[in-house]
Length: 230
Image (tube, rainbow, N blue to C red; front, top):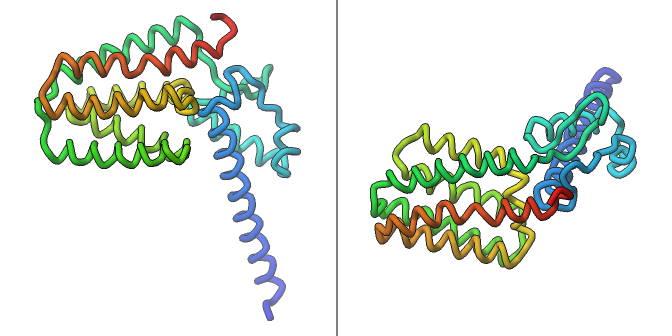
């Protein structure tokens, strides 16, 4: 039989663990909703509604919103509360212009053909990506998509350039994941990945540069199509 002090300590531990579990669940659920388009840009995330939906206290909801703000997909302000982050047309055009320049430059400086080890790793990742797509496992698709691009652009041989590409890739996280929910756009993304692998294996630089720029356009168009100012 535990003494009162032990029971109190255990209760505090279990309560903290339960809160952590609830917090993780809220963050994951809202993150998926934002990344895959069920929560739209500029949509308000009302604390009272979230408290009722998840059966938690206000401080847990606020912690979840703070974490989502840290991920760059929620914006909080004193006057408006929390909203799903959006980008202006000007911001979108400017950011995608930078992405195009960076990715084209990476393609220009890759030593082609890339090594067999890189080809094998990209091929393995893309096979897993295809399997996740067949299962419609959106979170898994997202994770594998991140891995594919990280390995792919690391092959440019310039770590700072690869980091810059990854930084903008992450900045556009919500925007670029909208297409994942569309099976037609997702299938085209899979086709592009395989074409990118073939291009670096064959040493076809012109095709590679074109693919690196063209591949990011569907996410831009899909995001813009959700906005009221189109």
